[in-house]
Length: 274
Length: 328
Image (cartoon, rainbow over all chains, first blue to last red; front, side, top):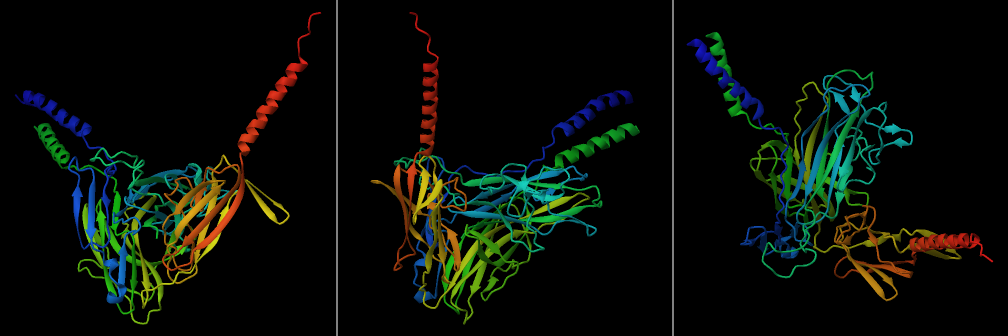
């Protein structure tokens, strides 16, 4: 009897193990995007309404009545404008970072290790933006004072700086640096072998501009201008509302680098330009 | 019996673990801030409230609000943010649940409002003061024996404050640079000749300097005139902050133009091309003019034609020297 129970139970057990092994959720970073339009006319909101097209809710249009900015300075002692008045945008400025941590694992001498982060900027309504980066300092030992310094790339004619990327291909060139690929990046990142060291807040150095554009805008005037027709047959080629780039962090250590855990904080700042 | 018990317990543990396991995700940061920029004129002694909304569309994260002064950096629209809050303007958060520089836990899909009170004390000198509201994630260390970079993300909203008694501001804009990057330049006597290839877009740099204490908003056009044909480009409305210089852009912006150039002018004609700019800074301000010219030559086309002619000539000469002998 015992043997029969055991024999019946074994397949059930194996089934559980099979389910456990093969039906786990994969680990992934979530991308949040929308390809729909959201157009707002904004000032300082006093009143207004939200209009949505009745076909498939593709377009949302919000308007506001009144404008505090129009009130006379003389009577109030102030005027205020929010958003880019020339494009009437109050669509939020959004910045996205794919991860908060780049784990280099265990570093081996003269074996460069890399890690990546994806940066996304979405303005939606209008204008221009800048993304800067600066490190709190070089890679520093968590329990100690040793550091992995900033890279100078290959050195010689290929000596990079915080504003000028140069080639870093030599395995005997050590340090920490970053490269950029994607949209709106600085032109000195010619290809993925070009790196810069991070600006160092301890020096202190000004953060370096890594993404910049005056062209992140929703297509408020689609090209060509459509004649009136109900949405969603509004023709035209909308321009990107989201711009994206990838930053590749690279580190390489020498054989005399003291063992230990090293860490630093990389600070990204995304702002609509003024 | 023991084996059976072990199998049952193991199966139970696996089932419980499987049913209660949530997907393992990389921690993503997605922060939105609205309004993206605020510009205000305030009289000394007055205070105003500005309500900012920050939204977390990413994973839960500690967040803090900061106010920092900034100055324009370079002439391409970059800004340099100070490390500490300084200056004569007073800021406070009117919220009861958050304060400046005090991290709070910001859940996913949560929206928070930061009601910022801006107070201008009496006696503050007239002029512009530039600050930025930052919503910054607070990095947390969990290094775990590895070499790690911790990323912190911040979104900012520039706050352009003009302190004025009257509400009237004075625009002091000048044209700092209006130049083209010709293919060749040579001087003949006192005249400079700029030769451009009509087949290549011509880089233009148009920079405006603001020598005043208040920001200016240049408005105007850039025109390219060749013969009877005139092409006009509008200047993109951008602030030029006090005591700074900025390269202006055209509207709509061109995607492939480097940030240190205004535009790439295309459609240049054979012969003299005149490029002019007229710019003003609002009502009752003078219009500033700038002009440059260049001579358009289809250099590539000429080169190609010359090469083809040489090749054809060579073929003709070769053929004439190697004529087959006529039979007599």
